[in-house]
Every structure is written in C-alpha cells, then in structure tokens.
Amino acid sequence: MKPYVICHMVASIDGRILHSRWRPRTSDGGTLFESLHERLGGNAWLIGRVTGQEFARRADYDDAPRQVFPREPWIVRRDVGAYGVVLDAHGKIAWGRADIGGDPIVVALTEQVADGHLAGLRRDGVSYFFAGERTLDLQYVLEFLNRELGVERLLLEGGGVTNGAFLRAGLIDEVSIALCPAVDGAQGAPSFFDSSGSEADVRAPIAAMTLARSEVLESGAVWLQYRLHHATSA
Image (cartoon, rainbow, N blue to C red):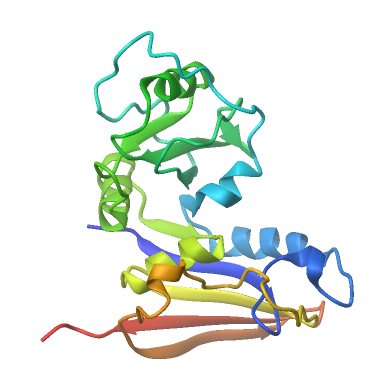
C-alpha cells in the first residue's frame, strides 16, 4: 500500500512558486505555506533534490571508498511524529544535519550511490533506503514509507519537477494550493507542476478533479483543495 498523498504548495496566481520573483513583493508565502502544512497534518513530507539542497549544511562528503555498504535500508529512528523525505537519486546532498525542523531526514537513493556518500549519511545520522538501481521508482518509495515507517498521510511539497513526476505517475490523491495575490509573469520561473524536457509531452492520467474545500484567507489568498480521480487502464 501507499500513503494518501497530498501535493501542497503556495503559488502566485500564475502558478509560480519562487516567492522572491513575485510582485508585489511579499514575505507571506513561506509563512502561509508552513501554517497550511500544519493544518493539513500528515506523518511525512517529501521534497526533491533541488529543494532538499537548500537545507544542506555541508559542501560534500569524502567519497573515498573506505568501506563497502550493503544496498539495504539504514533507518536511524522509527515511531516519530513526522519524517522529512528527500529524493536524492545520485547522492548529491551532503547534509551536515540529521533533521529538518525536528523531523528526521530519510533519503531515497539509487544503488549507484557511492559508498563514501553512504558513510557520510551514517556519520550525520541520516536514514536512507534504496528505491531503484539507476532511477528512482516513485511507487516503491511510497510503498516503502508506508510499510517500513508507517507513513499513512504524506505531503508532497516540491519542487515543480518532483511534483510533476508524481502527478504523471498517477500517485497524487489530492492537490492543496494556496493562490496568493501576486504574480510572477516572467518566463522560466519554477511552476507548481513541471517536467524535464524528455517528459514534456507525457500527460497525467487524471480523469477528473473534485473540489473538496475552498477558503479565502486573511491575507487575500485563496486556499483550494481538489481530490484527483485517475483514469483506469483498459
């Protein structure tokens, strides 16, 4: 089984998610994101490598292969309130920390990651597991989190390429978007859902979307929650 997945983001009215580019300038985006994150609940949240890199405190790990580690899960803590899950297929993030905001970090890797990187994760007390030989199997990521860590409700929180990958895989159950009274209006800004060039023509298997909740917030933002109904293959 997989957790119930809610893709949660705060965006400008043109669907852009980089707050520093918004006009009028506002500092409300991050605060609003966190407050709605708390209201949504969940016992894990998940981000991609680019977003995860923002939380790193080291430049790199020593990749010299002093020890060979089995390609097996290494979980430091269990039965916690929430996990911070990061997709880092090729082992690019050197954390220098074991948690983000008190939530223990759990990294999803491929088996190609260097043993030196695994040693660095262990030194930092960062949990990890393998979800593919060369590429990440997103379905497996979710199933592992549910089966091994008891994750039943997961907040998927970007960036846009990561959100888009889960969307196209048919793995998102609900979308939570707070549209703020701001615009980006320029080419090239990261979006709520995005893709790599090779995936640009791949469509998400969505048959319908049902509005489950709407709320006008004090800031003037509008919070919308949609349930996704996926097309079944013939």
